[in-house]
Length: 320
Ligand code: FES
Image: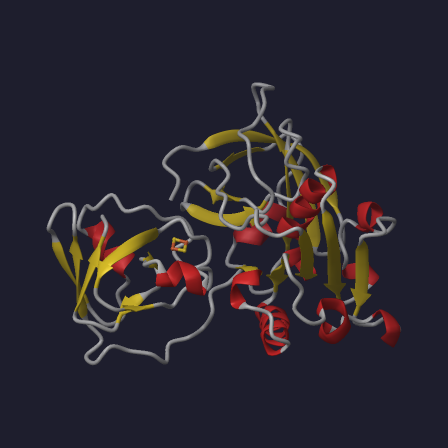
């Protein structure tokens, strides 16, 4: 969680669709906002009275540091986050964290295939801005239920690198994994963001077509529901290499919660396995990965999310 909040002011607010509001935030001191890379998100303190924090991607051009742009979908099952954001008006103050850069453009790829479902377009829009500014080769596929449900059409519609796919449109413009993603291509990265079912479809289609998992970059807005895997009795011990402290993690507890309750200054933000802020290195033991952000290579390198992952072994030693 952020311990350093930035004060911002809502400089403009517009309803992009019946359910999506677009907010531009500026500094009250009229100074540049901190730098961010395309794909970054910020924590937003939606309600300071009850500490309600939500994460939203920055969707404006990264080179414009006069403002941060957020687009927020009014969730039907909102627990206050998105509805609180929709109630904001021009001139309102809002506290946010510094940008967190976890989901970024690959340095290794020379071609970039961006696949967005619904409000998942937000981080990919920032990437498209950055790729366009850098003269990179990219394609953005934006899938939405209908034109009326699509935000940013004014800036996307006439871009020849953008393909719009509406569920209620003619068959020939629907998204097709076979043709729009196609077979694996060298030096090409796929980026996908959107609702869980959409992401699962895109990712499984790409993997089935032979794309290596390292080429697929993803950002979810909700954690994967996967509670099927358990250690033998559900508990294990975490040992911290730097202090020697040991903490028992019982069934139903997260490593992060136990460490924080024990006074450990462990990094974190979303608490749901989707932002990557809590990643630490495993030095010994066998992790039971339950996040949805680490690549196979990162897992093989010992990366571990304390907020969502557990252990298959009785002891897990962390570089903390
Ligand atoms: S705190 Fe966000 S992934 Fe762990």
